[in-house]
Image 1 (cartoon, rainbow, N blue to C red):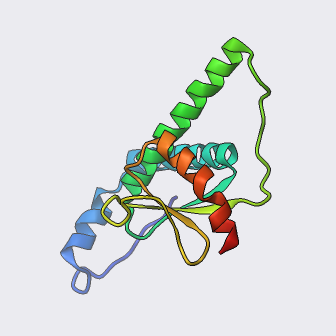
Image 2 (cartoon, rainbow, N blue to C red):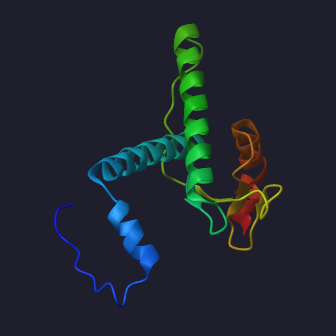
Length: 145
């Protein structure tokens, strides 16, 4: 991430200049850490639910990040409980027949629905347990579209 950006201050909006001047090495490192955490959490949720997640247009990055973090923490907690109790096999879902999940803001999506493209649209404000049960109920309908 080295280098210099040369801009003509006369033709660049002041807000852009202020924003670019505020970028520091610490902020870039913080962004990289959060991006890696989001990637790892999303991967864990996708594998656990056998789905393909994506952030919808109305969902903010913060909402999506928070949902993935909460969901991954729940999965980790459940995994640890299973390890302590030794009840049941540990499985990893394959990437076959993954249903598409679109995460939208709660104003745009109040309840889970199957779209005309065969994806399940969910709200970022839903609890992980509600999301899991909704995916289970709507999975067959999503594959039929």
